Length: 111
Length: 114
Image (tube, rainbow over all chains, first blue to last red; front, side, top):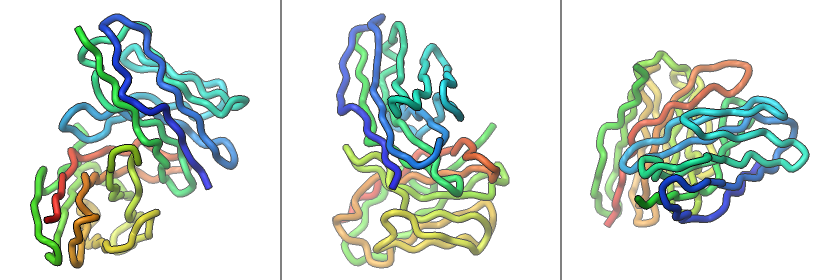
């Protein structure tokens, strides 16, 4: 079946550091890929998505590129802020409008 | 503005109690989902529904049931709560389409079963 693997956290960075959170997937076909973010005390919200190979999703300074050859969708940001502290989830589309999520990666950004 | 609401942010129940978790969305979405979120395991799908009175089992349906009598409301029921059902429960909704649309999530209900 489909699966998503994320790097384990927590990831701790200083403000303005470069961020990479790795995500790889196993799936049949070419599913859409997503990054969701969960801020403290809140539900998940969509951060960005990519629907086909080589697409780049971007939002709020975050980017991720759909790499079919490496089955990856790594999340990057050039300069993190304290307000980016949250849990980040990588997910892929299954048939029938369903998502398979990775385990989540907690990011902590220190001033 | 899109909104998914859940009836409680925190619940404490005793083993063996029947527990109802309610979710309401105001976006006229066809699809609704219940997940549980546990550290290191991400989100796991319990049940989902494509339409009123329709339900499908997800990955971990054991010990749970659901009800969808109206399009906007999707209820999760724990018939006899157990301590291993202590978790964060998240409801989500999305519209139907050829490709997966964005799922919109509620704030979650943190359930503790003693």
